[in-house]
Length: 315
Image (cartoon, rainbow, N blue to C red; front, side):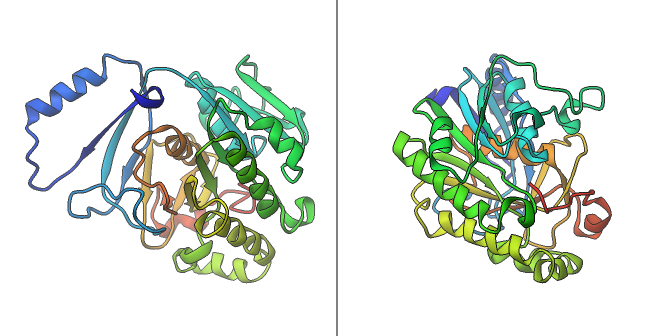
């Protein structure tokens, strides 16, 4: 199959014409290969069809259950690999047999995440020959160019940090460099982690978070909004991008469930966000390309309680 993958999507129709026997045969064929776990994407049913790349950036979609079957591994690039969500992406990709290259200002900060790695491994150094950590800064175009090579299958941008530590335009400047490097090397797929409340999803943020967006997090969201514009209407608009807007981020173990939502955001484990991002860059028929889905695993009423210590200040 193309890109070493076969992507099997079972769409739940209320009056499905697919027979049970056909579905069983499809599953039997799929299980002959080594399967890779991906989150179940649960969203509002939309006339029994998958909304593909032709749809504009929005936060609505169809209800899909997906099984990704891996035939061969490839190479991915992660920016923000020392962060809580980025380290989840690195860990999960390595566990699935991928080669991973990441850029870090301080490589010694790379550590196994608690969500997927478990408490016994959390914080310990990665010990995997398929991981390459390049010391550098995403705001330096030359450093970014070292990470993205012709053999990279896809890129995950999961940058974060407080403005006083990383600057007020790090997300925009760094993503600009990534886009340029991807185009130079012919890499098309990219998942960009921003936040609920960014762009046209401001109305989906809980009230408390809206207040933070307008005050202490105003500079952060200015940067996030400009970062998104690079893909929605800027130089990255011709890439196969997915802007990922998670709700309140937690360090919990992965649940395997991602809700693409239209209403108020709930909480979601960083591990589930990472799995969603990997699907965005690896699955040939990923249904949310050229979109900006808002995702959570828990309803909006629990957002404040479950958002975690760092919340959405850092990706």
